[in-house]
Image (cartoon, rainbow, N blue to C red):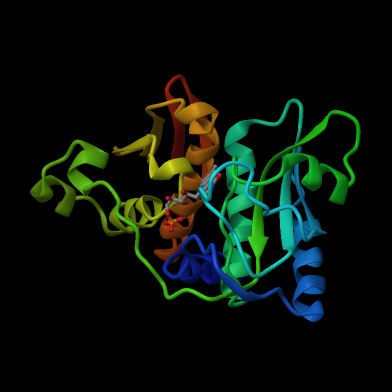
Length: 242
Ligand SMILES: Cc1cc2nc3c(=O)[nH]c(=O)nc-3n(C[C@H](O)[C@H](O)[C@H](O)COP(=O)(O)O)c2cc1C
């Protein structure tokens, strides 16, 4: 519960940091290693790594990361649900934010071979994404998101009539990061709860992105004292109020 409050607050400050002043302190890395252990679930785990080379650009300068050589790999077993990769990975990302550290989900712009040689994998595991970790050398930037109307299909007036917890949950989910900022989701509020509908494959990251939005949605609800469970639906995942 305490973590949920902490991560909710962190969700308001998180943004993708690509330029760093320095890596994390040893003490911070120890704390993050402890958190990584706690977060191991649903066939997903986080491993910390260090490498000078992992952020060397592969092509052009797209998404270049500089100033840190610390990273965390988000690792999934073969049968892990992509949503859970996003969900668990984002919890770690928000913990980094809460500690004052910057992060940036990376699916493409890093050297995969180098990451593989810096982190030990068990059989059946793969690295899905990594994130640099370090002291940000950038000011907070709120990157654009779709309007509430586009995200929910509701008019501003209808959105305003939703219950407080549903508005807070959708507001927090709207801040979720996604690959290329595609926001491959729609949120459908009903008596039963809120459905996170996956609207695009987003180059293979669509369901993972939705998992990130699911954690955010849950954090927004918990901020209002509302807890619940996730139920799998044909077109997405439904948060059902307990
Ligand atoms: C699954 C995933 C993969 C991503 N891959 C990359 C990447 O390869 N390179 C990069 O620079 N940013 C990457 N991003 C960061 C997104 O571009 C960023 O989250 C999005 O533009 C929204 O910006 P914000 O995080 O600052 O809110 C990725 C994000 C996610 C969730």
